[in-house]
Length: 435
Ligand code: URA
Image (cartoon, rainbow, N blue to C red; front, side, top):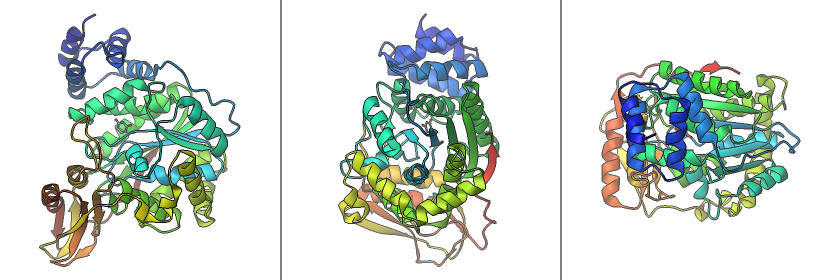
């Protein structure tokens, strides 16, 4: 088999066999097929799509790893959550401790910043010392001790996604339902979980901009999970503006702690309660989603979720004093307000442009090899529907390099539309698919 023939076949609308998909995926993971050929194949997939059989073969090939994680010795149900990617989406940092505090075991394999969206691993690594690179044995041990651990793809777990994810990020091949589905489900199905809660984003800050496309992605993922006997629910949720107010790694850690302390922005808090309610329900720690909501709220009010987050940070090598004293988190040298020139109401925010502005500041990656600046980011002051006066700040940029801040400020201004009135806000949870 030759990679070039398979690229051509996909380019021309053909259907690859499971053996051909396996050849490309495993050949790339092993280093036998170069980046440029896989990049071309990914672009062909983005344009041509994949049939159900091709997708199943891709997920299967991407799950292949030298070892399979077995968590069957742990006494409680194992439930994870994954988001398809958003701007200011720090829910994992909040709901993993909530669900674990409620008695669910949460083995979480997360991703890094991708395109204009942030990544859980980059956020966690902004906490001094936090180690997301546990070995599988360490992962298992931490889960047994405290019920939750958060790591990235490793050579031992979902190794194909580690390479493909970075390549897709650098080649504009992220926005493909089968590629997103395979990326997420290969990680999640390698975790030895019983159930999975998916947060499928929809809107200007998501990879899928329309509810129809987001529901299609949600259905693909629910079907993929069910086919291997997992209970999967997908919540299709709005991403028409950044979630909460903070965008950028350490800024998002601060906002997460605020929610765990019982405060924080209402949209973020509500979504976290909803997602944790489903985790607690599927983890069989509540008899209904309604009871799951009450339990999730109780975990915050009692301080148990915040204490669990401290425990996770300490156990993964982080300095948990930074959760009490935010001055111990990385911070930037400069801040600058981006000012509105018009008065009215915020009628539209292009979430993707806000995400790209934070990438420009250094919060994400433009090339695969880039490192992120953990301190930079954006605090959003004006959200959809808010009244604005000319001269008021729309956002504050936290930055280290002035030329980057100029470019980010221009993008932020482009992303806002101020008008005499604003459309009614759509509900945050648009649809529930599954379980
Ligand atoms: N999150 C992932 O893990 N993979 C994607 O492709 C998109 C979001």
